[in-house]
Length: 79
Image 1 (cartoon, rainbow, N blue to C red):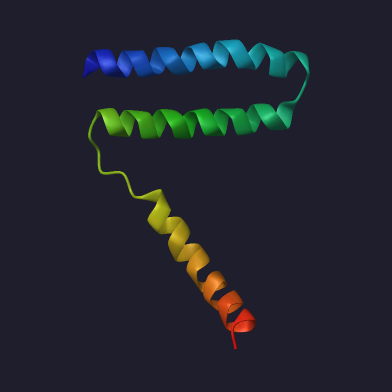
Image 2 (cartoon, one colour):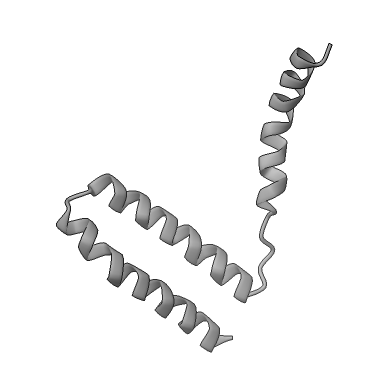
């Protein structure tokens, strides 16, 4: 398990090492912030999988949010 954690962290470090200099050179600061948010989310989910932590199902969350919208559109389109 320790090896898996180290591989995940190394993989993300390589991604940051490849992408971050280009973003800094182009001075795209908003993208740098979003990049780090996504990297942090990816690290969190990856480590959660490796450590076998209970991770909530993202699909169910999206379905919960979008179901009322689809129902409203369906009522409008189908008499």
